[in-house]
Length: 243
Image: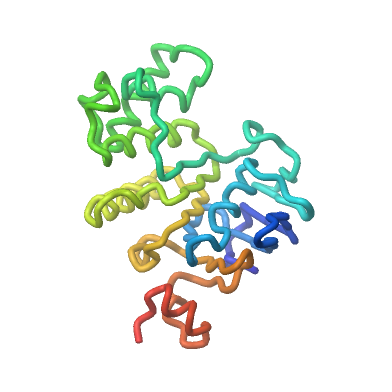
């Protein structure tokens, strides 16, 4: 399965099998560098497992995982050129917004003076300037997710995996976060793989889609291909294809 469109390859899953007893999975996938690709499909189809295999949270029983040209199949999580943002923002409740974001640069030590400015710049880029000293409980849900977003931006890795990070937000906030993502891509492009149950909301922001069903990739294409009448009816319906 190719999601390339003339760009170099950033992610390549080659016959990657995951032996989940209820539903054995197998993924073949190539993702273009510096593209935004959405991963969609019914609940329980294997979307999050696909991301977890790339990130290293799950290990395949067979196949290879290449990231940025390197075989990462057996590389531990910390050694992969990947950041991941989950639906839950996972901020430390006892630390300020600035300290939480700083983990993106220095997870095991205090940030330096120069690094602190980088943290503040990242927080400003996600709309949290002036809120650096607040605690997570003093922020709205959208603001907490922005703080977590700033942290993964500071990790500055070439691949960013998003596992429904905007799902708990309302439609206008989801749109705001996607606009932020698009802006970020212009200033510092990354390869982004985003799990979503709202594929139609990504029509203007994504480059490609991957449709996962029962542990397999059933369809892929450019985001404009969502409306392709050649796609299976169940895929077109789920993607919100225009009739």
